[in-house]
Amino acid sequence: MLNSNNLNFSFSGLKTAVLYTVRDNPKILKNKKLKSELCAEFQQAVIEVLVAKTLKAAKKYSPKTIMLGGGVSANKELRKQLGEKIKKELKNTRYQIPDTRYSLDNAAMIAVAGYFQYSLAKNPPGARLARGGKKKFSNNWKNLEADAGLELKK
Image 1 (spheres, rainbow, N blue to C red):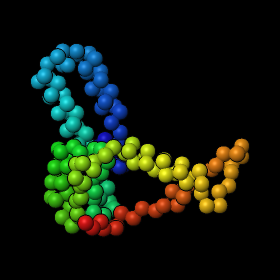
Image 2: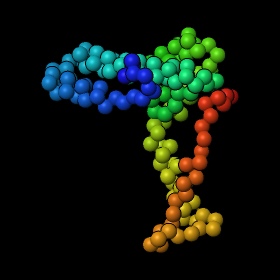
Image 3: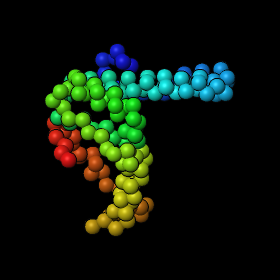
Image 4: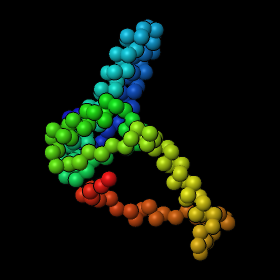
């Protein structure tokens, strides 16, 4: 993934490799040192891909700010390594990270968005029913546009 010409990434292959390594070498789970080393190598492999793809995207799109968010933003090593690379290679780009107490998994955001979407569908202004008497959810999110050039301020 590090040498691909795109910005895509997936860790399913890496996770499967770790699964098979542990399955074929059960002694790893019984040895604290081996288990720690495997976890550290897994973490570093993921960090390298996330940092490399972030920098590649930033060099392509020239954002004013890079924000690390979601559950992954709680990872201290990712926070540190991404910050160091941005400072070194993207001198005119701000790096923002939330306090770790706000480093929530995306599932929490999706649940809250779903709750509000459902609440609005129950009693929206000018509500109309879809076929079968069910209320129809709005697709307003399809009209949103992202602007990587916006600057985030504290």
